[in-house]
Each structure stands twice: as C-alpha cells, then as structure tokens.
Length: 279
Image 1 (tube, rainbow, N blue to C red):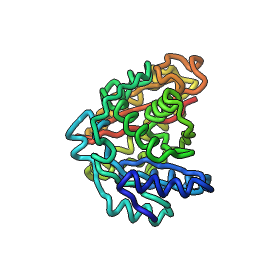
Image 2 (image 1 turned 180 degrees about the horizontal axis):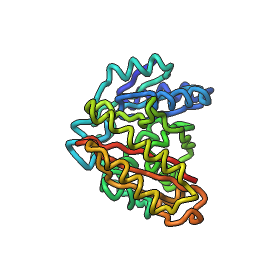
Image 3 (image 1 turned 60 degrees about the vertical axis):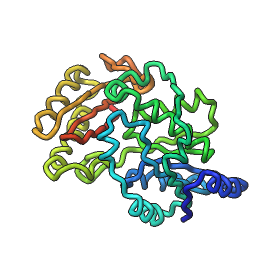
C-alpha cells in the first residue's frame, strides 16, 4: 500500500495508474470500522485501483467540541487499510487541503434545510467543500459512500450535478453491529451503558418498518420517538419520515415512491444517526 501526504505526489502517481486502470475513491475521516471496509471492498471489486483518504475536515463541524472529540487513529487506520488491500492512502494535513480558507457557498435548495442541515447549520456546506476538493485532487471514476449518511449522499449527488463532475457516486448498504447498531466511528466514544442502550435506535427503526404502509406515518414516527426516548441514556434530536428524492417529510404512504425514516439521537454528548427504508 502506498501512502501520500502531498497532492502533487499523489496526482503524479494517479496519472500513471489512470492510463490503464479505473480509479475508485473512498473518502473517510478515519477511525475506520467494517462500514468503511465494505466501501473499500466494493471499490476493489469494480475498480482497478482503490484510493482512500483520511482527513478530519474541520469545515463540516459546526460544534468545536465535536471536532475535538472526533477519534483520530491514523496508525491503526493505515494498518486496517493495508490489511483490506487498499492500494493508495491519501492522508494530508489541513494546510494541504485548505492552503487558503474555502469561502465557497453551495445552494442545495431544500435538501440541506431539514434533518442534519437544520440541526447542524453549515455542516453540508463544509461537506461539499471538502468532497469537491478531494474529487478535484483524486479525479476518481467512482466514489463510494455509505447509506448511513443518507442525507449526505443526496447532497453529494446534487453537488456533482452542480459542478458537472463526471464521477459516479456508488451508494453502499449500512453495515451494522451484531445487535443491529449502525457502525459509526463515534460508537467507540460511547460508554458501556450508552453502547448497550444505543441498540434501541435500530430496534425502533426495524419496528417502524414492520408497521409501514398499514399504520399512519405520524403514529409510526411518534412510537419510534417514544421507544428511543424510553432509554435514560438516549434523547431523540429528530425523527423524520421522508420522501427519499426530496428529503421532505411525508404525511401519507402515497406521497412518494421511496420513503425512509431518518433519526438522530444523542447518547450523552455523542450524536448518532441511522435510517431505514420503509417503502
């Protein structure tokens, strides 16, 4: 596995590989788990060369304490990626990605006005800044993202259209722990009691799925919120049942072709998100 910190060196290497290989790209913020490795595996299956980046992007943290707490495990991450058969790792410093402050402001219409965008103002603009910057650096044929970050995937797809980028966005399924909790880098920050109770998030979503199409949407939402909030360790920040294409809330099952339930939950100071398709 090759490791690069400088853009110029990475691009020189990729220009050689691009002559006869497709480039698959998995952008990460490190603290890797099986969810990330599923993206690496998918890239390796359909691309000639797989590149992963590790960069904790300050621009997407609207909470400075959240940025400070975010786990940084570079040495372990490099070992994990090498064992997974990743070909190239790009692990730049902040000045390499942002030699000057990125002042671009993206307009995503209503996509970033709900859910994560509502509760984390500026978050998705920071995501768009760094992902577009990484796309410009790596120039991949395909880029791989997990469905756990459902709204983020919609934002990135919209951004690629706005910027007329040729990269194909490949969305991969959520990878869950054995008890159902969606894998997340933040899971390692949970206390034992928080980790035990966090399974209520996926259990509430799975129960919601069993009630889909036969129970009013408002009742499903309210029951899921009660289920999660019944744990003394958990507090729902939002629970929305949405049209998958617009991300806007729906009130009836006939209002959209695909309907998802999306939730954000606080376990103490740790914030977890999850989602499930209901229709």
